[in-house]
Length: 208
Image 1 (cartoon, rainbow, N blue to C red):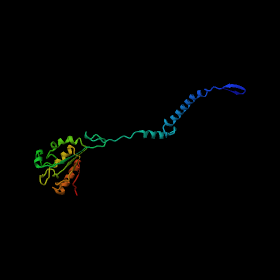
Image 2: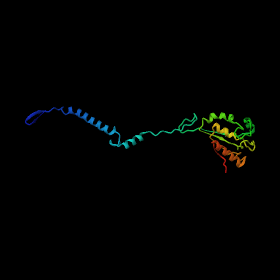
Image 3: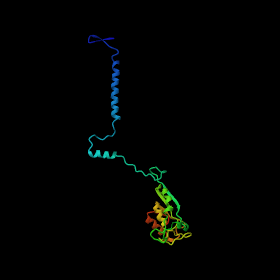
Image 4: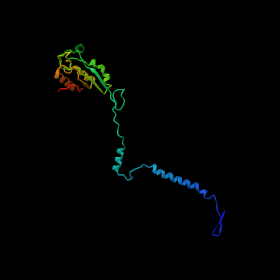
């Protein structure tokens, strides 16, 4: 095909435009990729580059992760972070036929040596040590140091029972029972004050 231009005949190449399509498409694709990188790859909402020292320090402080406080229980059956193991046993109910086996040299001693119940409580230690809270049930009031002691039906047991309970690791005791009033208000006050002095928390009966 020819056409006349400025008085001359010029031959037109019908494939000239097609040769430019591929490079032009490649250029457009490259520009699109660059634009997409600026839009999506850069952090959004970034602070200006000219931040002051205080702003940088604040950002570093906020970047430190908050430590997670864990509270694992003592029991191997309780490994979770928010789990505790609690032990509760039945009555500490002492009859004369029981406490006679743990008498000291002088059952009227007032220094805590009249009886020694540690061997009786010792087998409980392995269970108490695997518990976060160990609770006993103090069935009866306790006598004054040195006695006198009485058994059923109106109890007044050796106070060394409480001593051994504390040494083996009990952390709390309940004492609301059918024998709470065996020694009246004085017996309740004697028990609660003894548990207080030994660091054993308690609830159930009250001084007033």
